[in-house]
Image (tube, rainbow, N blue to C red; front, side, top):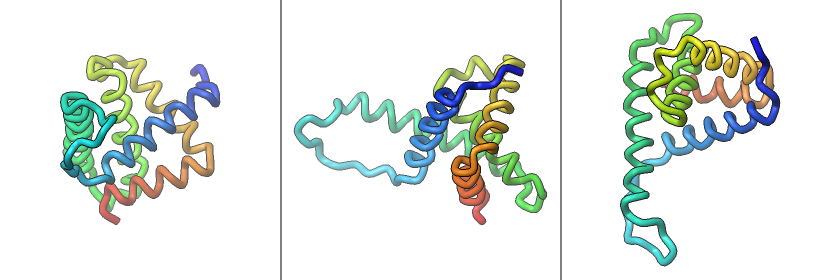
Length: 128
């Protein structure tokens, strides 16, 4: 399999970090401030984040927390969900997409900082 260059891994890591932060933040409505984004754009971003959170929650619930590979499975589901949200649901049936997800997962596991972040996110998603 072709390796993803370090710039690509860092770009994907940035996407993952942004999604983790978006999922961790409660949705708060407030009055617009000067220079704020239009309401439609904010609603679209919130809707995308909410759809991702719902998809992720649904898929994580299907994973047995007692499974010794639960954390790895959760991270695989998380990466797959984030990448589908970012690049389009049409990729779900593409076998190459699943190879890419696996490759990204392996490369991120090879980076100590990202591996720790992934482990922490997996535990949080599993409710540990």
